[in-house]
Length: 92
Image (tube, rainbow, N blue to C red; front, side):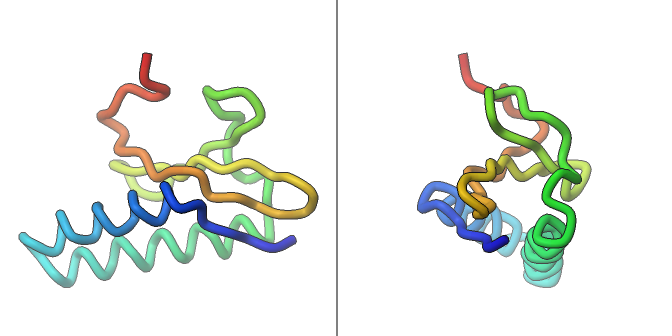
């Protein structure tokens, strides 16, 4: 298995980091590390996320406030988005 971040997921990750960093730089770094650890978990256990609300996706809770949305295509785990748990997902 290999892992790739989509452009939109990279954008989500950067936005989350920037937002948290304004209040607490250490927490921003910790959250980003949690995202990285979650992706390492997925490489070892790709089915560890629950079936996603969007067809053919899975969701892995990384923190009580964020989950990764990903899919698996041709031996590749694609991180599609990072969603705040308070957001409506998928958007209607």
